[in-house]
Length: 270
Image: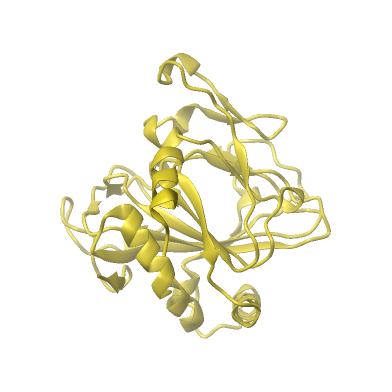
């Protein structure tokens, strides 16, 4: 369970490192299960299985050889990942940070940066990329399946940025892979954009708020960088269709209603 000091750190910075929640055997089982899904050998299929670097709207110039494997809702393809999403201590931490008595899966995602060719992840905020749900109070639990360090493209975070509002349309990914802002005059007065590396050990969990600025560098090392992120919805999240999203076709409630349903299962109740 997170300590009061860690909770305060999350409230201040918009991210915090938790405990090692998976042992070596558990990590290896998830790795093997991921291989089956990526090879198309699982009984069911995820919502998406793609190379993010191929997206024309990715927001920056990508090298043709760069790869960022993204699998969305691997829990739908794998009972093992479904059980991981309901990991008791992870869910207890998220519920504590969110102040919620119930958690549902919004969606999960694998992001895998292979050795040498793993591309950078552009600077972004999560919630503005989810234009069908409100309010912006979701929390993600990012569990490393390999040590995530600077050399193999760990995430970087901007402390305090979750309190600055929606700046997604103004975020740029600099040539040094650090964040830039198109309209800095729109930022709160006196703030400093000072990204810090968010290195996570294999099996460890890191939590971040859905408005926290984050991005990552390329993986030019010989190391793999695999991770499973589960984006959790507290009990007050509503369906508000202001745009489109791959999960839109899975929604069967009316605008303004709480987002519920079998494709957004409850994984924790206090």
